[in-house]
Image 1 (cartoon, rainbow, N blue to C red):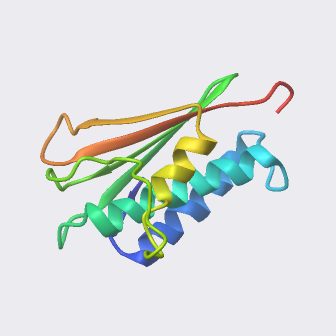
Image 2 (image 1 turned 120 degrees about the horizontal axis):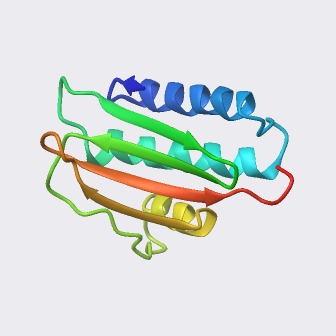
Length: 130
């Protein structure tokens, strides 16, 4: 899915991801759904805040199999490596990737293969029975 690199686009990405997760059998009211939509929200917000190039969109890809959900958010900015840095008490921001690191089983990033930018991905292993 492709979204405008705006706060509205990030909100829409989270909302549509939530609908897709529910359709895949990860219902709105379960812990897995809450964790996954928070991961999408943080990665989309980072794409808007740190990966925005005016006039270019960011992309969200979701994949699900029997055990794992994979989230990929691709932006078009090449500089700046995503790092889960420890925020200082003086800042109100900078905790997004710490949340992703805590909620996801794995996460990382790689350069975008088909143009400028990068893809940040996270994988969440579904609990048995979800």
